[in-house]
Amino acid sequence: MNNHWLQLHTAILTILVTSCCAMAAPAESYLSALRGALGQTRSNLVNLAAGAERAAGEFLGGGKLWVAGRQADFIAEACGRAGGLVAIAPLGEQLPGAHDIVLFAAPGLAHADDRKLIERWQRQGALVAEFASGAGLYRERYPLDTVVNVADLWTWTGEFVAACTRRGKMPVLYQSYGLPGGRERGRKYQGTRFHDDLTINPVPAGVLGREYLDRIEAMLVRIEDTQMPKLVQAAAWWRQAASSQVLLTGHMFPRHAQDPRSRPAARFAAVPAWEDKDLLEPEHPPEFVLYIGYQFPPRKLLEQARAMGVKLVYSDVEAAQPAEPASNILYLEPAWPLADGCVLVPGYDIPILPASGIIQAAIYWTIAATGEPSPH
Image (tube, rainbow, N blue to C red; front, top):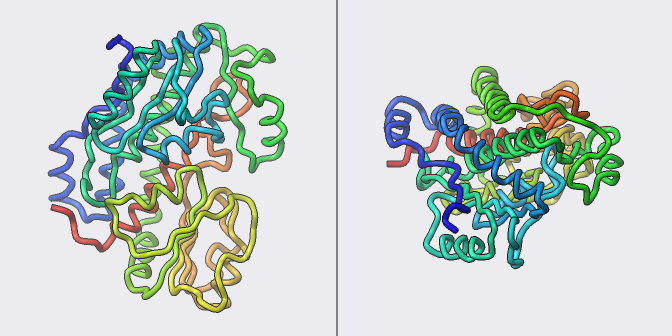
């Protein structure tokens, strides 16, 4: 049964770790190291596509698609996601059956207990794809490994979709509920594995995965080229504040930002993606607030910050007008599209493969890393 185990990502090369630490400041090295890690995914694309090909065969044969593992933010990111597959769900305590596919994610390297669990599933006839890597550049703080696992997830998903099209089927993927018609489309296709209302031409292996990596890298480059002064200012405000709060939107958050290897001093809270409401307590406002949002600006939060004099850094696709209505407010442009999905499949009605989780994480960790001593 060992042939049912696919390891999709190898450890980040040591040479990348040492060269980045020696040559770049922490804020810059997180973005550049993440881009370097995505280069490792790119170099592994042939193997990743081959694994997705096998998974597509099991899926078309009736197998179910599950996600599991010790990386809880990976599980949350994979399910119910704009640009992601409808027919995927958390495995939880269930036991996968023959022909099922399990995407298993672990921070850093897989443990012995992970191996035992995977082997148990293999004995049931399940195909297991493991998403695990070395701890990355910041082994103790500001991790890369979990972000790379998510990038690998969406690269793999692109190759899985392409493999299905080569078998004459198009899996159903979600449109963002923040866009007109998104919720109605979601209800229409809920519980549906494949489209029976359209035909997609076969997509060659490597095309969708490569395009996704190209898009993500371009977004990271844009952030580094245009937003670094604001990221540095945001980090300075955070360091100088006696009290701070981090407000986070998205499937990965806030759990991802609470990685035990990091030590940012802040209170974390999840906030809704589309509900605009007051988010600060007037009696006890923090000195600094970092808001990592989704598509639309938090207008009421902006009004509160302006009135209370709270330093606020916010990031979402659409900025308020003006973007920075007061000297205590900074807007970070995240470079990902309003649809979230960033890859077009010719003939498909929506873009697929979301960018926001990876980019939000990159923005968060860049701010958290700036001005902190480099780990040794």
